[in-house]
Length: 270
Image (cartoon, rainbow, N blue to C red):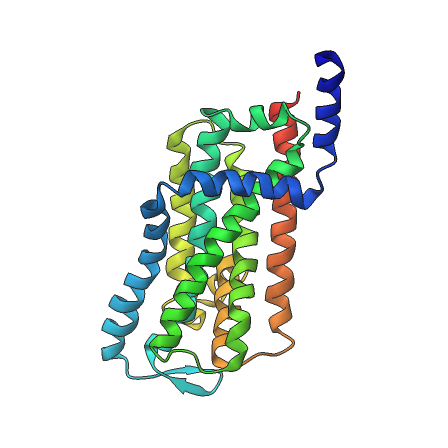
């Protein structure tokens, strides 16, 4: 009887849809964070502190700022940048440190791939969880912006999907990079990449302050595209040019997801 039931159970596992297989890993991560919610919350607080200290505090010294011909308080200029950074932080934290631990030490993915699941299921599950985390941070931050009167257009309702798109782009690329890391010291490269992005992606001042060549570099970075998109939505300056940021971030996320699937298959199945 036992000999007959074992292959049947494995066959039923393969019947899970892509969404079902993705949801299994998302649910697993939810169960882990249910007891560590304080670590989850801390990722939201950092951009809020930046908004209060620099946006509102330093903003007292800069009475107004120009966005596409519309004059707004400096804090309203900074807030969309912090919204995009919040989405980036949520995605980066989960797809770098946590993925590395599960991959190298916890051997979680070896266990998952011993079942009928595939590397693509693992990639989608982890990236979906990172999106969920970044989406929660962004939704909470958007509520803070609304409460402080920093939202100027109904287009802002699309700021949350835009934040998810930012999270998708960073989750895919960062998880892909994590598969090449060999030790905890390698995470210095993550900080080396995310800190300049955070400071110079038009979060606190426009790229027009840079020399022309550096401005072109900044405008090609993913966080800059995310900041511009969020700023356009919260101020109502939406146009066809906004699609450039949408397409850029979506393509980046898809490329990252594809690389992660191939890397996990190469690392764990060969």
